[in-house]
Image (cartoon, rainbow, N blue to C red; front, side, top):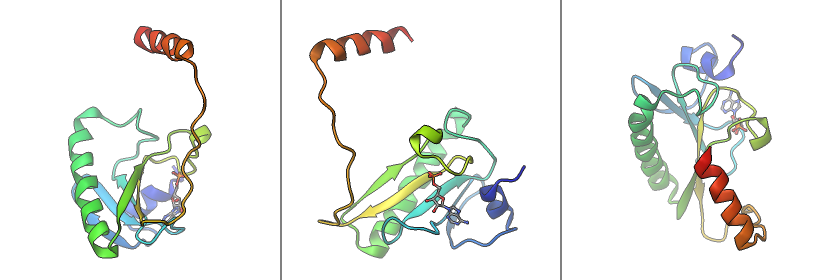
Length: 133
Ligand code: AMP
């Protein structure tokens, strides 16, 4: 399989590694959105979060918390986004599951997603649909 993150995990292509354990790797993003932008990847290949085994959830989240704390301290961030794109429609470009840690700074001006208007009827219909799914 021609997967760039698998190659990084194997050491076939270089990365700026900032953390690692048996299951996960954390390295700096090559095109950072902000100073300290990093990625967390599972060492095994999973396409996205839907393929990710639930038994690894706790370790993954704990690793993300630890890495976010270190990054925030190192770059003196005021906050951070923890984000995951799943599927092309959501902006996923690398098809090996990963989570972005994006440090944020007061007044950094990074755009937020625009909220949409929605009626109570629409919310109710949507809720029923999701509850039945
Ligand atoms: P996504 O849109 O969620 O799939 O994001 C993929 C991310 O991987 C982007 O932020 C890229 O900048 C980053 N990326 C791609 N190749 C590399 C690489 N070789 N080293 C570090 N980050 C990379």
